[in-house]
Length: 359
Image (cartoon, rainbow, N blue to C red):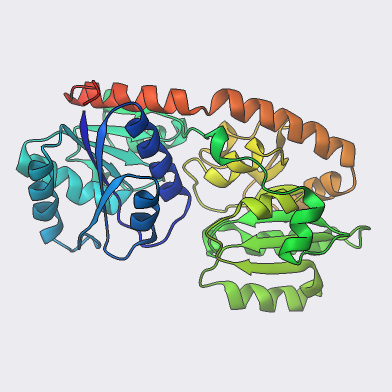
């Protein structure tokens, strides 16, 4: 099958890494792919580094009416059997491009988006049951939506270093319980809630330290909040990192105290795959990853007291961290497999009217 893969963000994050993994494994199975992304985007270089054909085109922006025509023309020239779009902007223009070219479009919905951007797609792939329910609530027929969980490739996720070596190489404190939050510094991710919770945990030995990996508009505000709370020495801002694996290796647990909907947070899949227990908000797709009381803890969004309690329990109990981490490895590796992701994706292509045979 000839598949045109389309995505629009400039920087690499969870959705982009998930798309590249999907493309890599489809190509290994004999399918021909062409990745379309904005000119100068990180994803273009990453795709080419994996041996995938990739081109840059001016397709960003929901007011970019030319994007549909660009994608229709490129799909026809590539002789695509299906257009597979990722995230809302690519899906908006890719689906209309598919209509112009007479080629079915399958739109991958990775967040709690408005359904408007996906109405012209022949079929939708939701990354979680929560995303599907969100789309159905907006009037999308449930039989147009396939739930396909993101798969984690074991070959990409070996721990690069042991915990102590990772901390030494990254310049992180050796005597601390590091709580990793790998997410953009935006209000919806709940970094501010985590800082309030850490302040509530009191003085622990070794200290509980937040490790923020990511950048965003809240960087200065979060630093000022930490100063006001008197915990500036217990917060580390590592900034944007193209390779987050060393930070997982250095950490003791992971957190995602989101206060707004999450489709299926890849950071929690990665944390579980690498043996980190998780404390996260019980919101949207997150409970489909975190098994309460077994692989981690779920707390109500914005509940500082509950978050502080679960963080304290994990910080002060090494055996609990080890048990939950081991359970997380088993659960994630059994449930979120590449094989299931590929099979579900090909089934969605077939349901959209494309041949799912290689070549």
